[in-house]
Image (tube, rainbow, N blue to C red):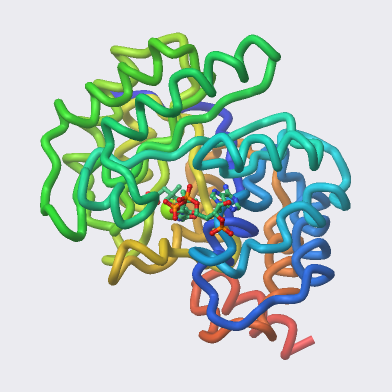
Amino acid sequence: MFSLPKNVTLIEVGPRDGLQNEKNSIPTEAKLSFIHTLQQAGIQEMEVTSFVSPKWVPQMADSTEIMQQIEKNGRQLVLTPNAKGIALAKDAGAKSMAVFVGVSDTFNQKNINRTTAESVASLRPLIDQLKMDNYFVRACISTAFHCPYEGFIAPEKTLELCRLFSDMGVNELSVADTDGMANPTASYSLFHSLKEQFPNLLITAHFHDTRKLGLTNIYAALQAGIDRFDTSAGGLGGCPFAPGATGNVATEDVLYLLETLHIETGLDQEAICRAVDIVAPYLSRPIETAMYQLYKRKENVS
Ligand code: HMG
Ligand code: MG
């Protein structure tokens, strides 16, 4: 019989993964208000923006303003692909950096214009420096289960890439099902191996809900002992370079699942839905998550 964790941390990725793929330009003020409302809902760790090329991801072009203007409470992560991103993020006051790399070479080329090996080689000295300067470093491992270009990924390849980043001394591995092709068996198996092989690292699971298996995959990862999940308010999200991938698993729906399992998160579900209300008018698609729809129905009745 397995035992589930008593407490779980949800790392909110809505302001970054959630918004990066949105076609409409969202005003910086709305993003700031989204972030602040998520903080008020109890979120302690959040990906707030990314310091990437504005030509590649125009929605994240206001990262300096975002970083400078948010209230500094909890851990605020920013995505940084290279030396320029790290330098800009440091200048804006970021203390926690998320580097990102794909297990699949093809995805990595499309996403950051380098092979996986080239990415690892160029990130190594940057991570060394960040660690020397006491920054928190998270490594986001994309296409950990499946690549939209190359197909299924052997778990050994994912574990091998995770080992390289563990050896570099990162604090956290966020292991991602980029295009939502994981299933509960694969989720349990990979996260069980990760827990076994990296007992001293924070291990976070990042599921996209393309095929509506996000919650099931989370339940399987909980059984493997995972107590950290990347989630996105409103189920927003998707990577512009992973065709067909839809949003992350929704924070409010994961919260409901955890509540039914008597797992504490310290988060206020209604406040998460209020945060979604702030960005909803700017989005190109309706919010269809179960708990947000129930919240709206309740609002319309009262
Ligand atoms: P490149 O074109 O190879 O870059 O792009 P470059 O070094 O040749 O530079 C070209 C131009 O970009 C130069 O400007 C640089 O200064 C500028 P120019 O001289 O032409 O005016 N530049 C930058 N500007 C701002 N910030 C920077 C930066 N770097 C160079 N950091 C690059 C390489 C990595 C920049 C580009 O490919 C890029 O920005 N990619 C970002 C892709 C991205 O953000 N993807 C989404 C996030 S990953 C994800 O969603 C997956 C995840 O959620 C997990 C999962 O689900 O799998 C994390
Ligand atoms: Mg993602």
